[in-house]
Image 1 (cartoon, rainbow, N blue to C red):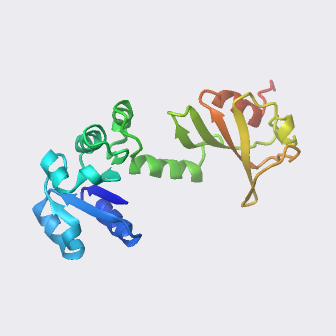
Image 2 (image 1 turned 90 degrees about the horizontal axis):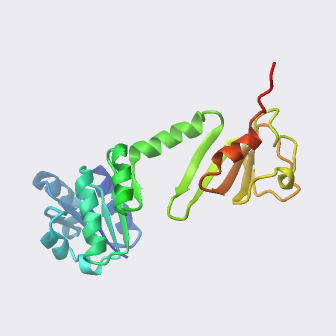
Image 3 (image 1 turned 180 degrees about the horizontal axis):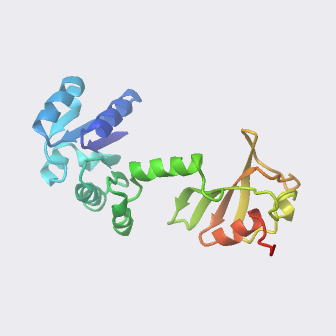
Length: 223
């Protein structure tokens, strides 16, 4: 593929290096003259000097034939603008944007800039995976498809513990896709028995979380 990466910070530089190493044609754009000079020593003709939010810079980089544009500058507004221009003016179908401030993610989504990658958000998800709250974790959201994948721990005394998958009584629009037990995962059959302590992965329609959690948490009973 021909890929344009805008922003030669650590992320952009390493990304360009890896993409080139995998056999892709890459142009890296950097607006800071000192940074450009440093990166140019390694990447030579693959790095261009200029402001990637300006049309003439993108055109000089060959955006008209780009298969993908990746905007990873330190400015969220620039990343949004670059991806919008790439998609709407030059017809680039695949764009990826870096979101520096996770509070700006809704703006990326509102303007149709997907996927937008937030390092802060990714690290928070990793922390949640290591220290899950109430045994529940979002693994993947697909808002456009109205689907999500979640991981939930089966707690002792929950309706799911000791039952076969086919006996769970899950709502329509949800499906158990994997069970993690003792560090090993497997795709369950209808008669696979779920045990307390299992971590269950499910794919479900958006909005079914509460109904799902009710099946995997202990029922609240009066003392």
